[in-house]
Image (cartoon, rainbow, N blue to C red; front, top):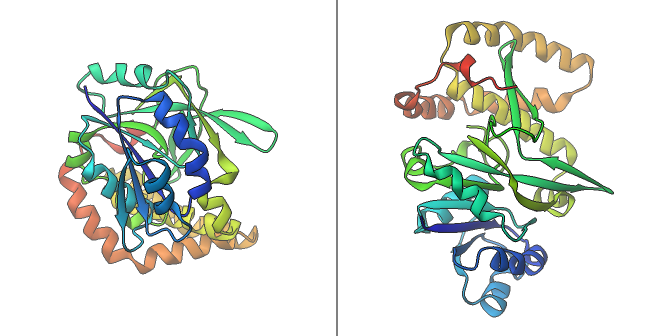
Length: 289
């Protein structure tokens, strides 16, 4: 089973210099691709000078996270593609436990144990739980003592490439980031260290902008994928109620995110029509606690 590691990068030269040696040490036999999203901080020069054996893909215009990842995966030759963000540092031995799950041909993706550095704390992340509640897909961090997960993190997870291609990869509707990977096995022995606060998103976007995009993409995800009539009715009923609640709690990012999603509604429904032939599981069966 061949492996490609795809690292999407945007102005992450410092992180690449810090974390690429760990990637090379942890996966010496894997194909490693850095897909650069038109960086202007010297990232490309760094790869060419310090890491000449790594395959560098240079996008001449910004594609956003989903588009940049898709570019890298398209170039990958491995049966399994491991996605690692630039702020991820894999530990030695992380790869084999991850790949063991792909002996089951039904497994599409497997996620890593994410030792997330958050201030002075280390929080164990990587396993997600989710439920439908009043027409919205509510997701949160799950306990890391089980193998099931509601999604696999696009910043530290492994994906079977042939299924990825059938799904046409990540949907660029979610650009620039978030919710593109909610659209799936968790491995606690596959450990990566995540310097969360040093990533490009936290460094270059305001808290309000991040929340706005996350809310917008939640609506995109729901409008693109909802298929069960009772859930659709719940969503129609509860959306205006949630908007009013957002006004009273001064959560203007929620309102702005909703309006941004509404603005691209034709594109969302076009994506919905493309996704329709792939629907095979009722909405409520996607809940996982």
